[in-house]
Image 1 (cartoon, helix red, strand yellow):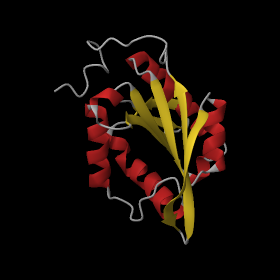
Image 2 (tube, helix red, strand yellow):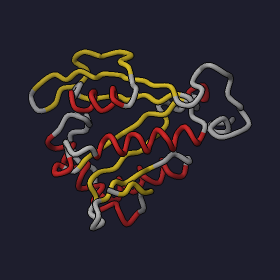
Image 3 (cartoon, one colour):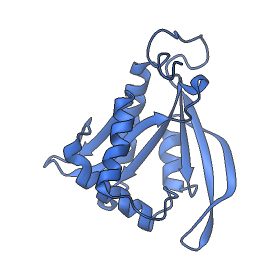
Image 4 (cartoon, one colour):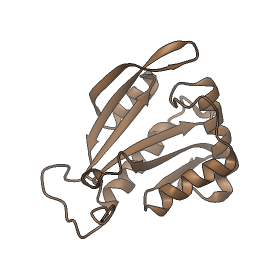
Amino acid sequence: MIIRDATPADLVEITRIYADSVLTGVASYELVAPDEAEMERRMSAITEGGYPYLIAADEDGGILGYAYASAFRTRPAYRWLVEDSIYLAPEARGRGVGRALLEALIGRCEALGFRQMVAVIGGAHPASIAVHQKAGFVTSGMISGSGHKHGRWLDTVFMQRPLGQGKATDPDPDTYPGTLFRG
């Protein structure tokens, strides 16, 4: 497996993977799968902000999944916190792809200077919770009955882990991500 930066050429597969998650899963609370143009807009917004967007590919170049970090909230004080998102092709689940993507994403975010990462786990999916626990995340909260999809109520679990020095020291506001959201 190869972990690499996503490119616009990957959007067909990214859109397919996300559509499967929207239509059959509970990780996303969207009910209608966005088209490729919308997925391109979303990818551009993330990457233009300097956040990492990664692909896991097999030895033949087939895309197994993708992950990205993005702003948890857009208010300036949140700029040190990123939210991770991971989506896998159905055939890639249970093969360590999610863990590899998450570990790479954590490394990238630490190198960029982010101090905390949060996972917002729709449907409180046990496999997603497990992969985050293995990567050092701890449960920081839950919203019961936060969504209704596929004929049932869903809970959302929040998990968090520090990045780099976490909250042990003050960050440098003059370096990225301190320079995000300046007014």
